[in-house]
Image (tube, rainbow, N blue to C red; front, top):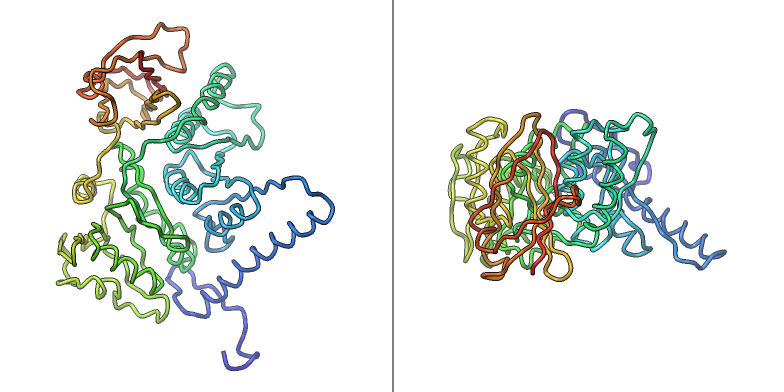
Length: 417
């Protein structure tokens, strides 16, 4: 800006990326005002009350562009002032997986809630599967629950299971995912960017893959993550592009989708500066290409994918092979499964059947998690009246069968003898 008369609110561009500096400067100003507002609230309260102040910051990925429910803003405030971050729409695997990953990176407690009031039984159980699998510490009931489809006795039992699972911690594969808030805020409505790309998240869940998601507007600390998947981050700041280049040169494995790194925030030209930084040998290729940079490797998918098709699924599984993702627990494709660790080396296998037909599945815990030759008692937290069975660690690794009724959620508690 050269004169105050040049400063005015830019108008949003609908159904197209707006990568102008004026637009992002305005978005940054709005984010700054949120931080200032929370700071003023805390200062005002402190004048009259010195008791601990708990702040609550909720929101959804789909609202980021116009409501600025950017998790990183809320998480920075919560780290400073205390409190929890609530991820809404938690029955949807996209906000559940991505929101919980960003929250986990800050060490702030995760709260979850549904967007449907109340959710149908299938979605309600999926919400709790994701709460247990992703480490939620609290659950918020909102709205009129008089017509809740989940039976009261089951809801009461689920509350008891939640209390036990809140004390456990998820076992995670050391693979990260990157979501770009800069891209989300460039596109109104945001769902037009989010939905086609992040349809890969439920497909990953169906094959027991779960990544630790991070955002380009937060601390992108990739230490301890030898592999990273970028989910079509079309708009990235120059410093993030440089960080990704350094990450690969130092030995990281980076998987890109076709629109990853198309724009640098600073100039807004669609010249794929990320591919330039990564020394991509064939940036116009429509195939799946791999190349080496420094000590690391890059894989790029050269076309947009429909993840619901068999071809899209095979591409996704190829990405997981390239990233060398080691699932803590595996099951029959289509069955959702996750593993958590509690006190005293207790393990919890959370399993959910998301379809309306019964399924037989085989669960296998990855080698190296269980001590060799150890014997375990196995019981389902949802059926405490059933006597536990006994098994040894080798059987848990080689695979043990279970039967699941339609939409069944179970939590298998594995207690070492």
